Length: 218
Image (cartoon, rainbow, N blue to C red; front, side):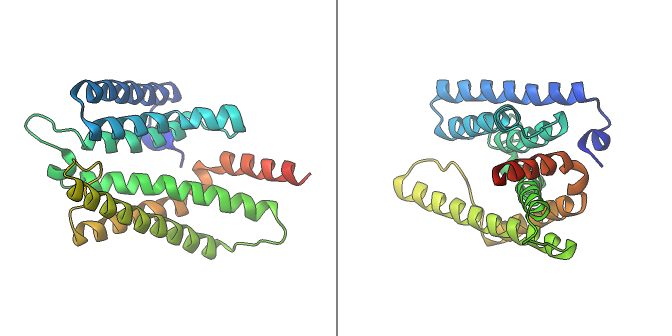
């Protein structure tokens, strides 16, 4: 099932939604600069840069990125940035909306899993010397995402410690061991979804990566 089938919206609407997220992140960046908020500036600028990644991959590397993939990537960074802002009556969603952190981790992990899936599948198809059985591929994606998730938690912990020592606001916040374990659980959920449905959503990307590997060997 592709993203457009899951959302039941047209490709044009998906592109409009991704563009709207870009505009919001740009406004968020300008507001952060005006308010001299380092956390807002960092989260908004990184998120905005990531939303342009699908276009760069398609234009410069010839990797097909349809509207669904662009929306998938944009939604992950958009929701993360949105969760760092204090909203009237709610506060920061990351701190006050119980499911927000779970959703963003599952979505972000699915993108990491998508990168791992498309890359390993392309190598598997390209090389006769490499063979990944379906079960191994499934396990590899889970381990790849879990390893990345552990690295991310270590980075969050390090940034929190550094912020505490320097007395500056932290760009990333860690809420304790139970929060880190739940993050890894939802990372795993995102990885499983890609391991099960990745062939449908990422088939064109895998084919393009395989073609580039074939061209490089030729």
